Length: 259
Ligand SMILES: N[C@@H](CCC(=O)N[C@@H](CS)C(=O)NCC(=O)O)C(=O)O
Image: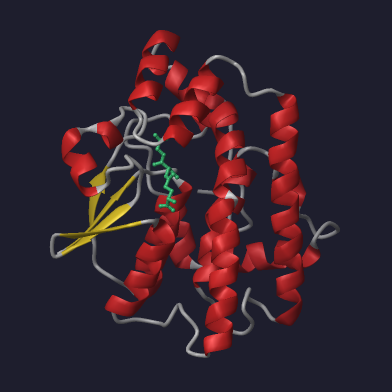
């Protein structure tokens, strides 16, 4: 029995849905609605004490951390290999994955201000959101959410977040000099690690980071990845609480036609 605890738009959840779909694994969805604070329910904290998504359970054993979950999915299940068999390429893949894991911070900073807070404010009062922020197990999310609700994340911080992502996208542009995918010829977990960020950036209207004239290799890579059925399926999971990105005036784009 394979269960993914996940949320429709969470970039880390999209990563794991992408890996499961690429491998053709049959899995069961357990939806954790971050906008209803399901992530802080005692029964979920038993399998994920940090109160974050995703978590994969396989025969009742929980596996946490999207990058680790994806390595597990690749090792444990049949289907196309997503970790290169060549040790050097596998090392390059893990280097890139680690950079992506660190870049969750600037993604979360942009996201909380431009997308999550507006959605939450349609459902909860500021007082309720401050109280919920203080209940979060991770200090990082306590601070991020309470500062967002108090309006303390200003333009300077958002500019710094965009600059960090520019650096990551420069590294992506360089990596793609060696082949169609990040570690060369083979599509791998490195491509899966960053693709959900790109989709999120497109929703935030930040897809000016890449275009045929600006980072052309990134632009072509994103067109290739957007055409993959596993990507399209992974980014199309519905907002089970309704409203989607459109509720707050955002519209993701990708060359395959949007999700
Ligand atoms: N390093 C973790 C990060 C997980 C994480 O931060 N997930 C976000 C969604 S992408 C979350 O659950 N946030 C909880 C919240 O906003 O309260 C992973 O890669 O799985």
